[in-house]
Image (cartoon, rainbow, N blue to C red; front, top):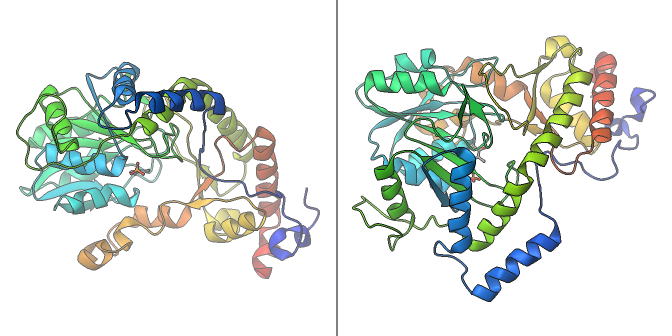
Length: 396
Ligand SMILES: *Cc1c(COP(=O)(O)O)cnc(C)c1O
Protein backbone atom coordinates (compact mmCIF):
# COMPACT_ATOMS: atom_id res chain seq x y z
CA UNK A 1 0.00 0.00 0.00
CA UNK A 2 1.35 3.40 -1.01
CA UNK A 3 1.52 6.01 1.79
CA UNK A 4 2.29 9.07 -0.28
CA UNK A 5 3.09 9.81 -3.88
CA UNK A 6 6.83 9.51 -3.27
CA UNK A 7 6.29 5.79 -2.73
CA UNK A 8 5.01 5.41 -6.30
CA UNK A 9 7.59 3.60 -8.42
CA UNK A 10 7.46 6.30 -11.08
CA UNK A 11 8.86 8.71 -8.44
CA UNK A 12 11.47 6.26 -7.13
CA UNK A 13 9.48 4.02 -4.75
CA UNK A 14 9.42 0.22 -4.86
CA UNK A 15 7.16 -1.24 -7.53
CA UNK A 16 3.92 -2.83 -6.24
CA UNK A 17 4.83 -6.04 -8.09
CA UNK A 18 8.34 -7.49 -8.20
CA UNK A 19 7.52 -9.47 -11.33
CA UNK A 20 5.92 -7.90 -14.35
CA UNK A 21 2.17 -8.56 -14.51
CA UNK A 22 1.17 -9.33 -18.11
CA UNK A 23 -2.03 -8.19 -19.81
CA UNK A 24 -2.80 -11.21 -21.95
CA UNK A 25 -4.41 -14.53 -21.21
CA UNK A 26 -1.44 -16.92 -21.54
CA UNK A 27 -3.46 -19.94 -20.50
CA UNK A 28 -1.36 -23.11 -20.75
CA UNK A 29 -2.38 -26.75 -20.39
CA UNK A 30 -0.62 -28.75 -17.66
CA UNK A 31 2.67 -30.24 -18.74
CA UNK A 32 1.64 -33.92 -18.37
CA UNK A 33 -1.33 -33.56 -20.74
CA UNK A 34 0.79 -31.62 -23.17
CA UNK A 35 3.50 -34.30 -23.11
CA UNK A 36 0.97 -37.09 -23.66
CA UNK A 37 -0.48 -35.28 -26.69
CA UNK A 38 2.90 -34.61 -28.19
CA UNK A 39 4.05 -38.22 -27.70
CA UNK A 40 1.05 -39.17 -29.80
CA UNK A 41 2.09 -36.80 -32.59
CA UNK A 42 5.66 -38.16 -32.51
CA UNK A 43 4.59 -41.81 -32.55
CA UNK A 44 2.15 -41.26 -35.43
CA UNK A 45 4.73 -39.12 -37.28
CA UNK A 46 1.80 -37.16 -38.58
CA UNK A 47 2.66 -33.52 -38.01
CA UNK A 48 0.46 -31.56 -40.38
CA UNK A 49 -1.71 -31.85 -43.54
CA UNK A 50 -5.01 -32.00 -41.71
CA UNK A 51 -3.97 -34.80 -39.39
CA UNK A 52 -6.08 -36.66 -36.82
CA UNK A 53 -5.83 -33.96 -34.14
CA UNK A 54 -6.79 -31.16 -36.55
CA UNK A 55 -9.76 -33.28 -37.67
CA UNK A 56 -10.76 -34.00 -34.09
CA UNK A 57 -10.50 -30.31 -33.22
CA UNK A 58 -12.73 -29.32 -36.13
CA UNK A 59 -15.39 -31.77 -35.03
CA UNK A 60 -15.16 -30.74 -31.34
CA UNK A 61 -15.36 -27.07 -32.24
CA UNK A 62 -18.28 -27.72 -34.52
CA UNK A 63 -20.13 -29.20 -31.51
CA UNK A 64 -18.98 -26.39 -29.26
CA UNK A 65 -20.24 -23.63 -31.60
CA UNK A 66 -23.22 -25.63 -32.85
CA UNK A 67 -22.16 -24.80 -36.40
CA UNK A 68 -22.13 -27.06 -39.46
CA UNK A 69 -18.53 -26.46 -40.57
CA UNK A 70 -15.31 -25.49 -38.82
CA UNK A 71 -12.16 -24.94 -40.88
CA UNK A 72 -9.05 -24.65 -38.69
CA UNK A 73 -6.24 -22.41 -39.86
CA UNK A 74 -2.69 -21.30 -39.04
CA UNK A 75 -3.99 -18.08 -37.49
CA UNK A 76 -6.93 -15.69 -37.74
CA UNK A 77 -5.26 -13.21 -40.09
CA UNK A 78 -4.78 -15.94 -42.71
CA UNK A 79 -8.35 -17.10 -42.04
CA UNK A 80 -9.68 -13.60 -42.80
CA UNK A 81 -7.63 -13.53 -46.02
CA UNK A 82 -8.95 -16.96 -47.07
CA UNK A 83 -12.47 -15.75 -46.26
CA UNK A 84 -12.24 -12.72 -48.55
CA UNK A 85 -11.14 -15.01 -51.42
CA UNK A 86 -13.74 -17.69 -50.73
CA UNK A 87 -16.52 -15.05 -50.69
CA UNK A 88 -15.07 -13.64 -53.95
CA UNK A 89 -15.30 -10.11 -52.60
CA UNK A 90 -14.64 -7.18 -54.89
CA UNK A 91 -14.13 -3.43 -54.51
CA UNK A 92 -14.81 -2.12 -51.04
CA UNK A 93 -15.58 -3.66 -47.65
CA UNK A 94 -16.99 -1.70 -44.70
CA UNK A 95 -15.37 -2.45 -41.34
CA UNK A 96 -15.09 -0.66 -37.98
CA UNK A 97 -12.14 1.72 -37.68
CA UNK A 98 -11.77 0.68 -34.06
CA UNK A 99 -10.26 -2.80 -34.42
CA UNK A 100 -6.96 -4.63 -34.49
CA UNK A 101 -4.96 -3.80 -37.62
CA UNK A 102 -5.15 -7.41 -38.90
CA UNK A 103 -8.85 -6.93 -39.72
CA UNK A 104 -7.98 -4.22 -42.24
CA UNK A 105 -4.75 -5.88 -43.40
CA UNK A 106 -6.68 -8.99 -44.42
CA UNK A 107 -8.58 -6.79 -46.90
CA UNK A 108 -5.44 -5.11 -48.20
CA UNK A 109 -3.84 -8.53 -48.80
CA UNK A 110 -6.93 -9.49 -50.77
CA UNK A 111 -6.79 -6.37 -52.97
CA UNK A 112 -9.87 -4.85 -51.34
CA UNK A 113 -10.40 -1.29 -50.20
CA UNK A 114 -11.31 -0.87 -46.54
CA UNK A 115 -14.09 1.62 -45.77
CA UNK A 116 -13.67 2.66 -42.14
CA UNK A 117 -16.83 3.14 -40.12
CA UNK A 118 -16.93 4.92 -36.76
CA UNK A 119 -18.15 3.00 -33.72
CA UNK A 120 -20.56 3.38 -30.81
CA UNK A 121 -18.94 5.14 -27.83
CA UNK A 122 -20.49 2.80 -25.26
CA UNK A 123 -20.05 -0.62 -26.85
CA UNK A 124 -16.94 0.32 -28.91
CA UNK A 125 -18.52 -1.57 -31.83
CA UNK A 126 -20.15 -0.73 -35.17
CA UNK A 127 -23.88 -0.38 -35.63
CA UNK A 128 -26.07 -0.93 -38.69
CA UNK A 129 -27.12 2.77 -38.55
CA UNK A 130 -23.52 3.94 -38.91
CA UNK A 131 -22.73 1.48 -41.71
CA UNK A 132 -25.76 2.12 -43.92
CA UNK A 133 -24.73 5.57 -45.27
CA UNK A 134 -21.35 4.09 -46.31
CA UNK A 135 -22.85 1.43 -48.57
CA UNK A 136 -22.64 2.16 -52.29
CA UNK A 137 -22.47 0.06 -55.48
CA UNK A 138 -18.80 -0.74 -54.95
CA UNK A 139 -19.26 -2.21 -51.47
CA UNK A 140 -19.36 -6.03 -51.63
CA UNK A 141 -19.36 -6.83 -47.92
CA UNK A 142 -19.57 -5.74 -44.31
CA UNK A 143 -16.85 -7.10 -42.04
CA UNK A 144 -18.16 -6.82 -38.47
CA UNK A 145 -15.89 -7.15 -35.43
CA UNK A 146 -17.01 -8.57 -32.07
CA UNK A 147 -14.87 -6.85 -29.46
CA UNK A 148 -13.88 -7.46 -25.86
CA UNK A 149 -15.39 -10.89 -25.37
CA UNK A 150 -18.90 -9.78 -26.33
CA UNK A 151 -20.85 -9.46 -29.56
CA UNK A 152 -21.49 -6.56 -31.93
CA UNK A 153 -25.05 -6.51 -33.25
CA UNK A 154 -24.83 -9.38 -35.75
CA UNK A 155 -28.59 -9.70 -36.32
CA UNK A 156 -28.85 -6.03 -37.37
CA UNK A 157 -25.81 -6.37 -39.61
CA UNK A 158 -27.28 -9.45 -41.28
CA UNK A 159 -30.53 -7.57 -41.95
CA UNK A 160 -28.63 -4.63 -43.43
CA UNK A 161 -26.52 -6.92 -45.66
CA UNK A 162 -29.57 -8.69 -46.98
CA UNK A 163 -31.31 -5.34 -47.66
CA UNK A 164 -28.41 -4.38 -49.97
CA UNK A 165 -27.73 -7.94 -51.14
CA UNK A 166 -24.11 -7.89 -49.99
CA UNK A 167 -22.04 -10.28 -47.86
CA UNK A 168 -21.53 -9.96 -44.14
CA UNK A 169 -18.85 -11.79 -42.20
CA UNK A 170 -17.25 -11.33 -38.80
CA UNK A 171 -13.86 -11.04 -37.17
CA UNK A 172 -14.72 -12.95 -33.99
CA UNK A 173 -11.11 -13.12 -32.73
CA UNK A 174 -12.25 -11.86 -29.30
CA UNK A 175 -15.57 -13.69 -29.16
CA UNK A 176 -14.81 -17.34 -28.47
CA UNK A 177 -17.59 -18.80 -26.31
CA UNK A 178 -19.88 -15.78 -26.71
CA UNK A 179 -23.47 -15.70 -27.86
CA UNK A 180 -26.00 -13.15 -28.97
CA UNK A 181 -29.80 -13.40 -28.92
CA UNK A 182 -29.52 -17.08 -27.94
CA UNK A 183 -27.28 -17.95 -30.90
CA UNK A 184 -23.60 -18.80 -30.50
CA UNK A 185 -21.09 -16.52 -32.19
CA UNK A 186 -19.81 -18.66 -35.08
CA UNK A 187 -23.26 -18.92 -36.64
CA UNK A 188 -23.75 -15.37 -37.92
CA UNK A 189 -23.28 -13.96 -41.42
CA UNK A 190 -21.62 -15.90 -44.23
CA UNK A 191 -18.87 -16.94 -41.86
CA UNK A 192 -17.07 -15.98 -38.67
CA UNK A 193 -13.34 -16.10 -37.86
CA UNK A 194 -11.82 -16.92 -34.45
CA UNK A 195 -8.22 -16.56 -33.25
CA UNK A 196 -6.35 -18.99 -30.98
CA UNK A 197 -3.32 -16.72 -30.51
CA UNK A 198 -1.57 -17.10 -27.14
CA UNK A 199 -3.19 -13.92 -25.79
CA UNK A 200 -6.69 -15.05 -26.75
CA UNK A 201 -8.95 -16.97 -24.38
CA UNK A 202 -8.33 -20.26 -26.21
CA UNK A 203 -4.57 -20.60 -26.64
CA UNK A 204 -3.16 -22.85 -29.39
CA UNK A 205 0.10 -20.80 -29.43
CA UNK A 206 -1.01 -19.66 -32.89
CA UNK A 207 -4.15 -20.73 -34.67
CA UNK A 208 -7.62 -19.83 -35.74
CA UNK A 209 -10.73 -21.17 -37.39
CA UNK A 210 -13.53 -20.23 -39.73
CA UNK A 211 -17.10 -21.22 -38.89
CA UNK A 212 -19.90 -21.39 -41.44
CA UNK A 213 -23.25 -23.05 -42.01
CA UNK A 214 -22.84 -22.73 -45.80
CA UNK A 215 -21.65 -26.09 -47.17
CA UNK A 216 -20.48 -24.77 -50.56
CA UNK A 217 -18.54 -21.98 -48.90
CA UNK A 218 -16.94 -24.53 -46.52
CA UNK A 219 -15.77 -26.62 -49.48
CA UNK A 220 -14.24 -23.57 -51.14
CA UNK A 221 -12.54 -22.57 -47.90
CA UNK A 222 -11.03 -26.06 -47.48
CA UNK A 223 -9.67 -25.97 -51.02
CA UNK A 224 -8.22 -22.49 -50.62
CA UNK A 225 -6.66 -23.44 -47.27
CA UNK A 226 -4.61 -26.29 -48.74
CA UNK A 227 -2.70 -25.96 -51.99
CA UNK A 228 -3.24 -29.65 -52.66
CA UNK A 229 -6.98 -29.52 -52.03
CA UNK A 230 -7.99 -31.31 -48.84
CA UNK A 231 -11.44 -32.86 -48.96
CA UNK A 232 -13.74 -32.65 -51.95
CA UNK A 233 -12.05 -30.78 -54.75
CA UNK A 234 -13.90 -27.69 -56.01
CA UNK A 235 -12.80 -24.80 -58.24
CA UNK A 236 -11.37 -21.86 -56.34
CA UNK A 237 -9.76 -18.62 -57.57
CA UNK A 238 -6.48 -19.15 -55.68
CA UNK A 239 -4.95 -21.50 -53.10
CA UNK A 240 -2.71 -21.01 -50.10
CA UNK A 241 -1.22 -22.79 -47.12
CA UNK A 242 -3.36 -21.87 -44.14
CA UNK A 243 -3.30 -25.31 -42.51
CA UNK A 244 -3.22 -25.82 -38.77
CA UNK A 245 -0.42 -28.10 -37.57
CA UNK A 246 -0.98 -31.09 -35.27
CA UNK A 247 1.00 -29.29 -32.56
CA UNK A 248 -1.43 -26.37 -32.65
CA UNK A 249 -4.43 -28.69 -32.71
CA UNK A 250 -3.06 -30.56 -29.66
CA UNK A 251 -2.81 -27.27 -27.72
CA UNK A 252 -6.27 -26.18 -28.83
CA UNK A 253 -7.89 -29.49 -27.81
CA UNK A 254 -6.41 -29.22 -24.32
CA UNK A 255 -7.43 -25.57 -24.06
CA UNK A 256 -10.98 -26.41 -25.12
CA UNK A 257 -11.34 -28.80 -22.17
CA UNK A 258 -10.16 -26.05 -19.82
CA UNK A 259 -12.36 -23.33 -21.30
CA UNK A 260 -15.23 -23.46 -18.74
CA UNK A 261 -12.73 -23.04 -15.88
CA UNK A 262 -10.83 -20.28 -17.70
CA UNK A 263 -14.03 -18.39 -18.40
CA UNK A 264 -15.11 -18.63 -14.75
CA UNK A 265 -11.72 -17.36 -13.55
CA UNK A 266 -11.95 -14.48 -16.03
CA UNK A 267 -15.39 -13.63 -14.69
CA UNK A 268 -14.15 -13.72 -11.09
CA UNK A 269 -11.38 -11.24 -11.95
CA UNK A 270 -13.80 -9.03 -13.90
CA UNK A 271 -16.25 -8.99 -10.96
CA UNK A 272 -13.55 -7.81 -8.55
CA UNK A 273 -12.34 -5.13 -10.96
CA UNK A 274 -15.87 -3.83 -11.48
CA UNK A 275 -16.76 -3.94 -7.81
CA UNK A 276 -13.63 -2.05 -6.75
CA UNK A 277 -13.40 0.47 -9.60
CA UNK A 278 -17.03 1.22 -10.41
CA UNK A 279 -17.29 4.31 -8.20
CA UNK A 280 -14.04 5.92 -9.36
CA UNK A 281 -14.95 8.92 -11.54
CA UNK A 282 -13.50 8.81 -15.03
CA UNK A 283 -13.04 5.02 -15.17
CA UNK A 284 -15.78 3.56 -17.39
CA UNK A 285 -16.30 -0.11 -18.20
CA UNK A 286 -17.81 -0.97 -21.60
CA UNK A 287 -21.56 -1.17 -21.69
CA UNK A 288 -22.30 -4.46 -23.45
CA UNK A 289 -25.75 -3.95 -24.95
CA UNK A 290 -26.32 -7.26 -26.69
CA UNK A 291 -28.01 -10.00 -24.67
CA UNK A 292 -25.77 -13.01 -24.47
CA UNK A 293 -22.82 -14.90 -23.05
CA UNK A 294 -19.41 -13.30 -22.59
CA UNK A 295 -15.94 -14.76 -22.10
CA UNK A 296 -14.70 -11.90 -19.85
CA UNK A 297 -11.45 -12.04 -21.73
CA UNK A 298 -10.65 -8.35 -21.70
CA UNK A 299 -10.89 -6.00 -18.76
CA UNK A 300 -11.21 -2.80 -20.68
CA UNK A 301 -11.89 0.68 -19.33
CA UNK A 302 -12.06 4.13 -20.89
CA UNK A 303 -10.28 6.86 -18.91
CA UNK A 304 -11.92 10.28 -18.94
CA UNK A 305 -9.10 12.62 -17.93
CA UNK A 306 -11.45 15.48 -16.97
CA UNK A 307 -12.98 13.26 -14.26
CA UNK A 308 -10.03 11.03 -13.32
CA UNK A 309 -7.43 13.78 -13.20
CA UNK A 310 -4.81 11.98 -15.31
CA UNK A 311 -5.16 10.98 -18.93
CA UNK A 312 -4.91 7.40 -20.14
CA UNK A 313 -1.22 7.63 -21.10
CA UNK A 314 -0.27 9.18 -17.75
CA UNK A 315 -2.15 6.41 -15.90
CA UNK A 316 -0.39 3.78 -18.07
CA UNK A 317 3.01 5.31 -17.24
CA UNK A 318 2.30 5.26 -13.48
CA UNK A 319 0.99 1.67 -13.58
CA UNK A 320 3.82 0.37 -15.75
CA UNK A 321 6.39 1.70 -13.31
CA UNK A 322 4.63 -0.52 -10.71
CA UNK A 323 5.21 -3.50 -13.08
CA UNK A 324 1.56 -3.54 -14.06
CA UNK A 325 1.52 -3.84 -17.84
CA UNK A 326 -1.49 -2.24 -19.48
CA UNK A 327 -2.26 -2.16 -23.16
CA UNK A 328 -3.42 0.94 -24.96
CA UNK A 329 -6.08 -0.37 -27.27
CA UNK A 330 -6.00 -0.01 -30.28
CA UNK A 331 -3.09 2.35 -30.55
CA UNK A 332 -2.45 3.98 -32.91
CA UNK A 333 -5.82 3.59 -34.61
CA UNK A 334 -5.87 1.57 -37.82
CA UNK A 335 -6.72 4.65 -39.92
CA UNK A 336 -3.67 6.37 -38.42
CA UNK A 337 -1.33 3.47 -39.27
CA UNK A 338 0.56 2.86 -42.49
CA UNK A 339 -0.58 2.21 -45.21
CA UNK A 340 -4.04 3.54 -44.34
CA UNK A 341 -2.94 6.97 -43.07
CA UNK A 342 -1.09 7.49 -46.38
CA UNK A 343 -3.60 5.95 -48.76
CA UNK A 344 -6.81 7.19 -47.17
CA UNK A 345 -6.18 10.66 -45.70
CA UNK A 346 -9.94 11.31 -45.84
CA UNK A 347 -10.29 9.47 -42.50
CA UNK A 348 -7.88 11.74 -40.65
CA UNK A 349 -10.59 13.68 -38.80
CA UNK A 350 -13.66 11.71 -39.83
CA UNK A 351 -13.76 9.16 -37.00
CA UNK A 352 -14.20 11.08 -33.73
CA UNK A 353 -15.39 8.19 -31.55
CA UNK A 354 -12.62 5.88 -32.77
CA UNK A 355 -10.04 8.59 -32.10
CA UNK A 356 -11.48 9.20 -28.64
CA UNK A 357 -11.34 5.47 -27.80
CA UNK A 358 -7.83 5.05 -29.21
CA UNK A 359 -6.76 7.82 -26.83
CA UNK A 360 -8.74 6.73 -23.77
CA UNK A 361 -9.02 2.94 -23.70
CA UNK A 362 -6.89 0.80 -21.49
CA UNK A 363 -6.76 -2.96 -21.00
CA UNK A 364 -5.97 -3.98 -17.43
CA UNK A 365 -4.14 -7.22 -16.54
CA UNK A 366 -6.20 -10.39 -16.54
CA UNK A 367 -5.63 -13.98 -17.56
CA UNK A 368 -3.89 -17.00 -16.09
CA UNK A 369 -1.02 -15.17 -14.37
CA UNK A 370 -3.14 -12.64 -12.49
CA UNK A 371 -4.63 -13.64 -9.10
CA UNK A 372 -7.63 -12.06 -7.40
CA UNK A 373 -5.24 -10.55 -4.85
CA UNK A 374 -3.28 -9.01 -7.72
CA UNK A 375 -6.52 -7.51 -9.00
CA UNK A 376 -7.29 -6.07 -5.54
CA UNK A 377 -3.81 -4.50 -5.36
CA UNK A 378 -4.21 -2.99 -8.84
CA UNK A 379 -7.60 -1.51 -7.92
CA UNK A 380 -6.28 -0.12 -4.63
CA UNK A 381 -3.43 1.49 -6.53
CA UNK A 382 -5.75 3.03 -9.14
CA UNK A 383 -7.82 4.49 -6.31
CA UNK A 384 -4.68 5.90 -4.71
CA UNK A 385 -3.70 7.42 -8.06
CA UNK A 386 -7.18 8.95 -8.44
CA UNK A 387 -7.08 10.41 -4.93
CA UNK A 388 -3.69 12.00 -5.62
CA UNK A 389 -4.14 12.75 -9.32
CA UNK A 390 -3.54 16.48 -9.06
CA UNK A 391 -0.26 16.15 -7.23
CA UNK A 392 0.92 13.26 -9.43
CA UNK A 393 0.14 15.19 -12.58
CA UNK A 394 2.14 18.19 -11.36
CA UNK A 395 5.20 16.00 -10.83
CA UNK A 396 5.05 13.90 -14.03
C1 LIG B 1 -5.84 -11.17 -32.49
C2 LIG B 1 -6.75 -10.55 -33.46
C3 LIG B 1 -6.68 -10.83 -34.83
C4 LIG B 1 -5.57 -11.65 -35.43
O1 LIG B 1 -5.50 -12.93 -34.96
P1 LIG B 1 -4.19 -13.81 -35.24
O2 LIG B 1 -4.63 -15.21 -34.91
O3 LIG B 1 -3.13 -13.31 -34.32
O4 LIG B 1 -3.83 -13.66 -36.68
C5 LIG B 1 -7.62 -10.28 -35.67
N1 LIG B 1 -8.57 -9.46 -35.21
C6 LIG B 1 -8.67 -9.13 -33.90
C7 LIG B 1 -9.78 -8.24 -33.45
C8 LIG B 1 -7.74 -9.64 -32.99
O5 LIG B 1 -7.80 -9.30 -31.71
